Image (cartoon, rainbow, N blue to C red):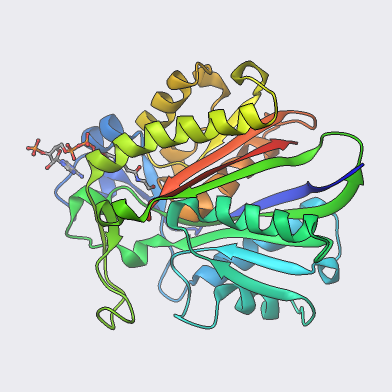
Length: 321
Ligand code: UT7
């Protein structure tokens, strides 16, 4: 018998305001052709003024709670991956905790940019396996649009806003179900290739995203393929065993390149980057929820979740759904 985190359910939320590439091209020096050819992105959802990361997070969480069929009061811990918190402090997780009417347990944010959901999931999984709580709400939520320089066409066309969530439950089981492993990495030597040029200590401003796109791209394909191989080896499995890759959605070319390196067929990759763009920590739970809701992902399927982001940070989770 082993104590494992089983995923009881998932949910997601996108702001109503959907902006196509064509609409963006009216105010930014870009084109639908360029964005689709280089990234696969066709549209993104953007939060309206006053619509906060905590609002998106709460809406995704409520859907996950409903899908899991649990009572809100059963939640012992909330781990929220975000780089766009409502405030510098308190954490967005404690705001969501209050909005859900929870006063027991604990809540905290995890900041690993586009790897935020992988870090949040691994953190919650390890708390549950250590016996510090039985039920966890794990959220990836971003209003990344608030970090964008809308005059920098090399970054502003790439990102969107949204949130996704899962409910984990610690269960003793003989079967190999739920989160089978998580693997996290970071290498701060490469921090300058994907960075926000402000912050409370550095500039006392929020700052804007700056990215050396080509370099980030190169690191992504190599690191993502390696961290997936690491997960498979740790579990005595091969890429043939994978039913679905649920990747961080940065660029369709990165998704294709990683799948090719792993010799996994492109039709096993869950793709939402065309509809959501890059929603940073929210992109994996958004993609997961889309594929669960439309029936592609079924109970018993083997999933590999993987992401890379600023830091650099990267990681994977192998999950038996
Ligand atoms: O989630 C975290 C991880 N983030 C990523 O993984 C992103 C990784 N990087 C990428 O996805 C790609 O590098 C980009 C999509 C950001 C850029 O694609 P690229 O094929 O590397 O293009 P590039 O940066 O080399 O730019 C090619 C050309 C340049 O023009 P010149 O210098 O060749 O004349 C750019 O100025 O495209 C131009 N360009 C644009 N043109 C129209 C750059 N952005 C745009 C734009 N619209 N939005």
